[in-house]
Image 1 (tube, rainbow, N blue to C red):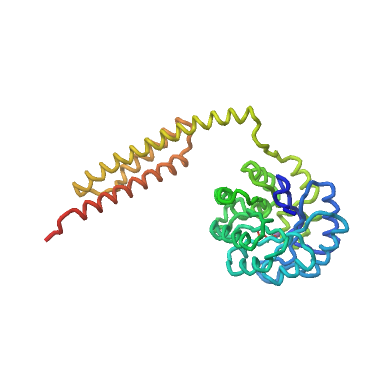
Image 2 (image 1 turned 60 degrees about the vertical axis):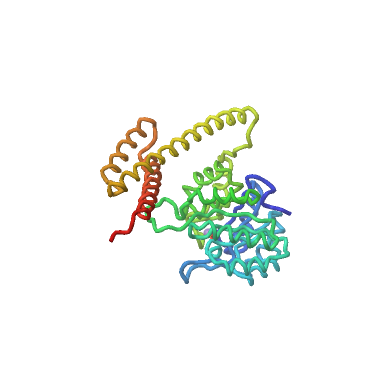
Amino acid sequence: MNYFSSKKPYFIAGPCGAEDELQLQNIANSFKHIAIDMIRAGVWKPRSKPGHFEGRGEEALKWLSQLKNISSLPICIEVANKEQVELALKYGIDAIWIGARTTVNPFIVQEIADAVKGNQVGVLVKNPINPDIELWSGALERFANAGIDNLAAIHRGFSSYDTMSIYRNKPNWAIPIELKRRYKDIPIFCDASHICGNRELIPMVSQRALDLDFDGLMIETHPNPDQALSDAKQQLTPDQLSQLLSHLIIRKPLSNSSADEIEQIRQILDSMDAEVVDLIGKRMELVAKLGKIKGDNNMPIYQADRWREIVKSRTNWGEKNGLDAEFMLNLFELIHDKSIKTQIHILNELAQDRPAEK
Ligand code: PEP
Ligand code: MN
């Protein structure tokens, strides 16, 4: 059964950690009334420091296998080595997820991929803790190479030193968007709980993910979040989860009439972009000419006054066109950087052509 492409959006929910049998039964019972597609529960919890709740291990696998008497939903747990995979398979777990701290380690990812080879188990690969798309795609490829086609990615945000951030793990949306571009057949889900770190932000991040055409969500859910043994602040009650799902705007594939309108607008955008690129190309030709003059006259390439004046005038022009100063600065930093590189190249060429000084 290919779980992850069976429905869009696909919803995975359940506690951060499996704490006791009653907690799990409680969750499974409440999901009878919520449109959840898979139950999650951490059985081994990777904790930064010792002395915190590290999961109930094999005992929790026994409780999870008993949940089949309450609910027919498939169950997923986190695994971080091959012994954990073997136990998960022994207890009939339907899917495993690879945690952010594991995706960073290609040796362990390969060990887990070898251990699941030939099994029907679903595999979800979380992004690594650092914003490195190659580690993330490398891990997905290791599972694809092991013959796992019940495969999906989970975006759970990236660690950062920024203590002022509103997020626990910054979303850096460009990274999961690029992953989606590379692997159009691998569904990608958003773990809004670990991105947000607090329950208030979860609706906003969940909606953003759906607006960006993510294939589903993973939301930590606990019967009594404030008493949770791990990640208490970012878990929802089943009622809050139900509220969240009922308020989400689910984007639909294009209707015919809006498809026509979108197509027309896209054609205009295409021709505008062609003009922009043409202009930037012409601008670079002039920059090259300027570089030659500067080189012939032994002038420095970079002139701070000129750069200051560019930033000032362009941000003013931007403001008049509804474009904010930060955007204008980013745009002209890119253009200016390319101009400097073009001129350095010309100066180097001129230097090579000059006869060596005696
Ligand atoms: C979790 O899902 O509870 C977890 C530990 O996730 P992550 O690997 O994203 O930190
Ligand atoms: Mn958690």
